[in-house]
Length: 140
Image (cartoon, rainbow, N blue to C red; front, side):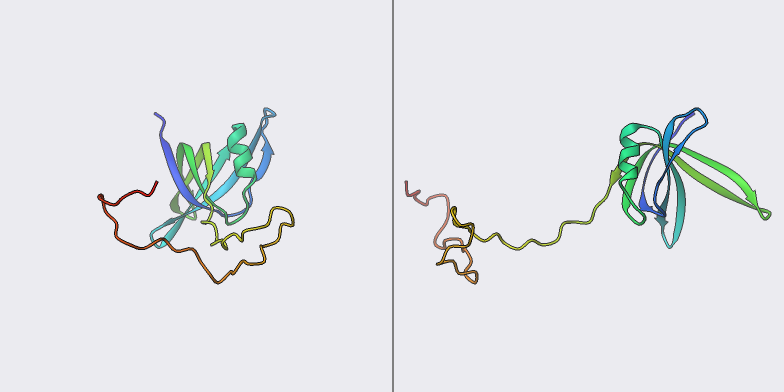
């Protein structure tokens, strides 16, 4: 039986490119997922070209979402049972912060590339006011 999982979190450290014993390239990373007030750590393995490329371009602390095959292994450490979680990534998606507010574009003269002489940056365009409704006449 196989299971698929979708995990969202941040990279715990930068991804590492490796070569398997069979000579195949893959990328390995650790994803930190917030689970309430605690954190879970997932080992991420990417073998496909697209998933590897997307994972390699990310760095420590970058937010991402990973979808792929899920595996959980139980191991014992210091007499206590623990779980190791891993995903063989089919898809990796970088989750970026929303873009910063942009300043409004200043109109430019075609020839010089500078703002026109009569441009006033303090003035802003306003929508025309007046009655509106379905019975308004359209002036054209």
